Length: 602
Ligand SMILES: [Ca+2]
Ligand SMILES: [Ca+2]
Ligand SMILES: [Ca+2]
Ligand SMILES: [Ca+2]
Image 1 (cartoon, helix red, strand yellow):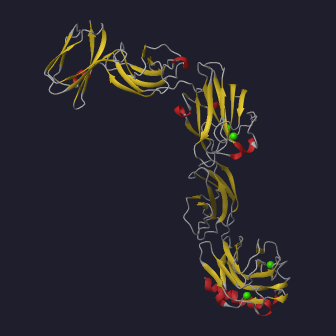
Image 2 (cartoon, helix red, strand yellow):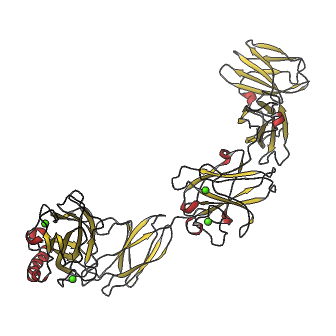
Image 3 (cartoon, helix red, strand yellow):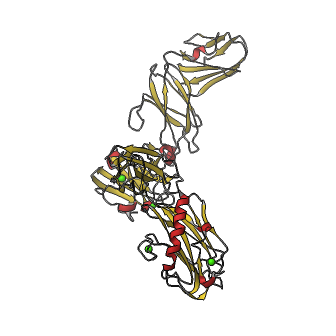
């Protein structure tokens, strides 16, 4: 087929070539202002024309239209890369390219100027541009013209200038099959983050409906594999793809099915799917922030990527540059703690798209907001921090975060209590769990002066607002506690805080959730050991041990009141000095096995 086109082309061009204008250049192209090379490649990088080292043509006009080796074939609807080199070392050379699409021997019809260089080129810096062939019917043999001119763009396809050169080439454009026209007016009707519905105007040649293809951005169904494809029944001129991803660009094409023929693809219809908005895009969907003891304690990763601005919400009073168009707000809420004091802060999550937030905090309700405070940059770098005090305990406040002037992406946000001079203990650990008691330990606070206070709370209750089930204190330097009097098989939360004397108490550290067991299971972990009598008066007997044990006795606030190494089969321990109370007896074997039991001292 292509050879036939070429034959027609050769024949026709020789007849027509005399009619084209030939630009004249008063100073010629012998000083380097020539077109030395012209390269045309398709979108896959295939070399179609590779015309190099031509130098300055006689008469400054290179007519290559009759050279079969330089005849090329281009497809309608496709885009090609053209590279034009000149011989002049200075950056003074400018080029234009025309194609006589309608074959009337003039390049001056609308759309026939297909390329103009945007910057001056030199011998070491060639011009690289693109040529797009429009949607044309049938097979067309015609002419492509390149003009190079020194110091300015060629005025038109006929006027030369001082220094410059013209090249003419014959090209064949393979256009649409006139017996099976493409659909037209391919239009996007609706789009979501995962789907798009599009429609087109039907072709008079359609007999069997239409084929459509969704391509990755910039790809073409003639060359590449579609991401989604389908066909419609005869007369149906709309289709929907549901295989899209958010925030992605696609190229959509449609073609006519004429039974024995398929039309050219119509397209691309270039689309960009929107980003799925965050769940807390709207005030009424605010995410609740959990109050932490410091920023890191309860910080969460949040994002305003794809968030939208509700025009019914007030414009913020700070950090609001281009807010309505460029800022993307998301919503949080925080419950004011008993103290009335709360900090809300944003920080970087190392997302390069988001390094500047604004923040407003409101009382009231969505749609009826009362501004408390707006903050731009009181956090780290350009992030935001609002420290509220004297608020109404238990009130829910709404927190609005946006990206300053188009910043969007991930950030950290936290609500936390203001810093105290007395630091919390840390690393609270459950050491022993029994049916009615449990032992805890923690890492000391460096600011502790007067010991610690601990509390066991009913599940989900907290010691700032609720009454503890059991509470107690331990003296300075002691970092363990035993809570007794608990109910078997019950869920509790343990909290502990530091007593810093004149500096007051720290925040409660916790909760550490734990559950008591049905019966004491630790009694069984060291087999064959008997501890008696229980209750005990003066002497506690321990029999049946096989090797070496460390014996410890703790009072109910977790203080170790007795410790002894046992290496005999029958040990008798004097406990007469202990006051009447409940104690925990702990035996630890050399291999680390532990037995705990409750001991009542009379
Ligand atoms: Ca030349
Ligand atoms: Ca023309
Ligand atoms: Ca929003
Ligand atoms: Ca800011």
